[in-house]
Amino acid sequence: MYDYNDMLTFIESMDPMNDTDCDSDSDDNEFTDEQRVEFLDNLVVEYKKLIKSYMKNHDVLEAHKNKIDVLSVEKTNLLEKKNRFLESKHYSLLEKNNALTQEIKNNKPSSSVNENFHPITKVLNEILDKCKTHGDKRGLGYINKDETPFSGETMFFKVNTEKVKGIPRLSGELKPIYDECMKDKQTKSSHKKVKEIKTTRPLDLLHMDLMGLMRTESKGDNRYILVVVDDFSIYSFVSFLREISEAIEHFKCLFNRIQVEIGYLIVRIKSDRGEEFDNVDMDLFCEFKGIKHEYSTSRTP
Image 1 (tube, helix red, strand yellow):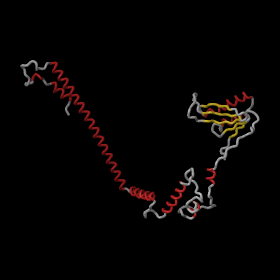
Image 2 (tube, one colour):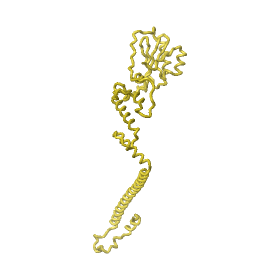
Image 3 (cartoon, one colour):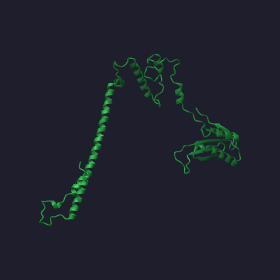
Image 4 (cartoon, helix red, strand yellow):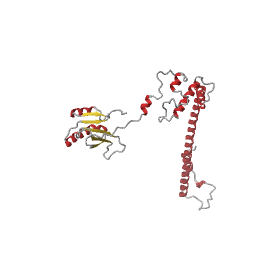
């Protein structure tokens, strides 16, 4: 590659007046000093453009060559790893596993499969197919004795007759319907509407609940709602909270305020077992005020 400084020195050393091909008798064809300077400036500018273009193309070419070298090295490493894997024992085990998996999917086991594996696979596939079409809302449930396509055979019968090898015998009576399924699928009965009010005055019993966390915040950045309902008058008190930790302070302020306004003392309060109700601060406050704190049952039939 030519050096830019050497080329510039060579161009500046050129003297158009020493050119023997020029006609000395014609004054119109001779270069003036201004024309020579302009000519040299234009020539230098063009040469600079050529040098920049060449340098740019050279850098791009070098970058592509480096990328090609890196990719070639990575390709060589991958080929070496692949060859090592193909020569290892893991590849042969993988091929055998894929062959067995394909045979099971096609339900055409060959002699390469263990003989004890055939009946287990067949029986389990039949059981799974029946469970999927049994109509159970949860996908898999118990199999009724009268509805199975196994001529009245149940899971209990299959295990005890050793149709599935390796599973111990089951003891006890045959249960066509399991207790766990009955408890899980039973319909919960609704509570009857209370027609009589058992309280005799306001603040005899207060029902409390906390709702949240709400997705949409209020203008005051509140995302929890505390609701207190008087059992006698069905009058409701509503408070808005920013954090669930503010619940105990709102309880204290609300209880003191409504007792002063109504003129009665609070006897009982009832709530669920949430952390905002079932805590040490709430217990100490109720004990200090002489309020009985009742909780709802954790599970209803």
